[in-house]
Length: 121
Image (cartoon, rainbow, N blue to C red; front, side):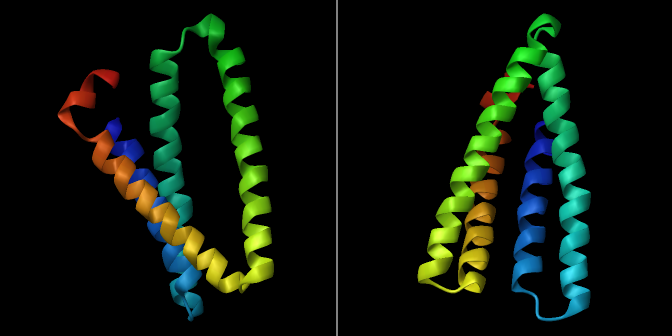
């Protein structure tokens, strides 16, 4: 399960980098397909981890809290990227954000596959 989450997240970020840096439609389509395909794997791993580790009677509350912070993070990140796009170009901001996402995904993948973390899965 840790590989499904880690590799799914890595491939999702890689797909975003391919999509945002492409100049040809076919390459952009390949990146878009990669994002969609890999996101399904990452979500499957995450929801399996969620279902295996959260007690049934607390799933609703924890899911709501997770959703709230996910939405809040999305709003804050959108505002930051919007402000950055005012100072720089939109293309530079989007490519930089996707590269940063790839870096974070690689770090999380490397942390995720360590043998010491196996007991979480």
